[in-house]
Length: 178
Ligand code: XMP
Ligand code: MG
Image 1 (tube, helix red, strand yellow):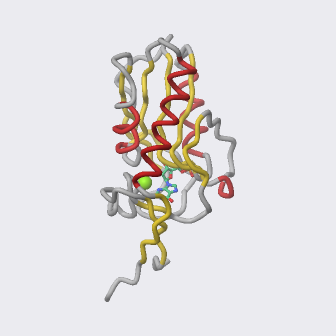
Image 2 (cartoon, rainbow, N blue to C red):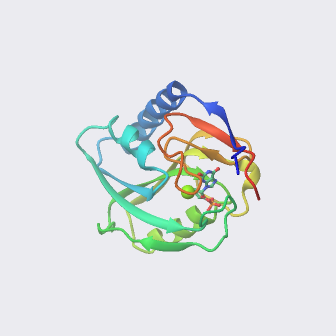
């Protein structure tokens, strides 16, 4: 059967890059000269992380967590599970969670709660995208790239069933069969 899915461009590569540089400047200003441990949530944030860290000097460390709440569908299940935990001990460190997109807020509120129990010096969150209309739980966002409508988006790390992560821009994916 022929696929009738459609990619409708939402954010260009240039828009993403210049907003990422602005976010990096804000973050660097707030943390000053102190080292930052960036904790990226796999897999969706890998390109955002890659562009963000290159705006910083040599006082940045990186670690990853993998969390699942979606499966292959386009609706959050609300059932948040840690599938890969941090390698680095965050006690006493400045931690910045790097997230691709905040939807219901379930992933972030769960992760922040967990990481706070490990006594970081500071815990902040940057998300490239936020869908405010989809929020069901409070998600403590310190830095947001773009607020977007409540549509399913792909590209620049974001997938649908593992496809489209390599698109250099962000697009609304429509025409999905339910
Ligand atoms: P919650 O609901 O926990 O969701 O805030 C956050 C996670 O859900 C994924 N997500 C998306 N992935 N296009 C995607 O490719 C989307 O429009 C979308 N909305 C949410 C994403 O993995 C995020 O970490
Ligand atoms: Mg995903």
